[in-house]
Amino acid sequence: MPTSQLAVPKYLKQDELTQECRNLLSSLPTEKGWVTSTLYKYQGFWHPCRHLQGVLSCQKHFEAQDTDILLVSTPKSGTTWLKAILFALINRTHFLKPHDNHPLLSNNPHVLVPFLELKLYLEKEENPDLSSLSSPRLFSTHMPYVSLPTSVHDSQSKLVYLCRNPKDALVSLWFFTNKLRIQEMGASPLEEVFEKFCRGVSIYGPFWDHVLGYWEESLKNPKKVLFLKYEEMKEQPEVHLRKLADFLGYSFSSKEEEERMVDGILEICSFENLSKLKVNEEGKLPSGEDYSAFFRKGEVGDWKNHLTAEMVERLDKICEEKFDGSGLKF
Image (cartoon, rainbow, N blue to C red; front, side, top):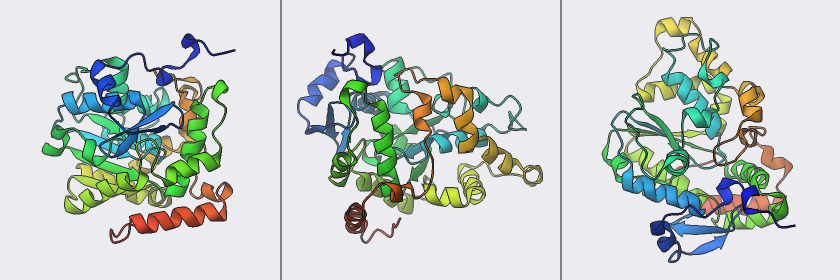
């Protein structure tokens, strides 16, 4: 029996697109999507139509402030974890002891650090009023560097970029998108999405172009863009939390170090803690995605359990060619 329109989650619907977006879609290259029926190529990167509408609205309306902090990431690179860390870091003076009624205990990190192009410009309205948000405003985005609103480039706002080994990013994205596919769709075979990923056809892909855009900008303008790798953060979380704090101008004081504030933030933001909270086990985004879908393993090297030797060799070769001469290695 076909699924009724009411049963289709909001993130799969296309009936709320603006005429501007519909007009643009007809002129763009297309590919079959991982979850949605179609991906559209805009400014060199692939987007589901609703995400693209959010990108267009951001480019048209978003006015960055010098104090804004944007967490940028490739999908499935540890975004949820770093959102929690970023929120706890910036707001630590309001919650001196992280476990005392901390907002992270009752709110999903995607609520506390909203996606610009997804939550703000899709779930509310095309041009939401952001004036009531306290400074510094914390946002996140998956937008490639070339697609960021002009106001972000022109302001003194800070960009924190997080990426992940492409083999783990691919496997995590495969699991995540299969969770979002409704029953009638069935699951996408790993072989199918692997081929798409290698051709650059993934959400906000090509992966390597997305990464290189921010990597190169971080080298040109290190005071504007901080480039982080998920694997390095997992290996030395204390070092990278302090690095993040220094970059944003929120360094830890001697007193905070004595009070083990760094350990407290990392503890409340840990995968183990966040994934077991009731809000993250039972809640949903307004667009219909379960919060639990954002918590799977968070492990480094899980690709070894899923990719064949041939897949690994091919993906490694592609990355070696794409990143050649950049100085970037995974």
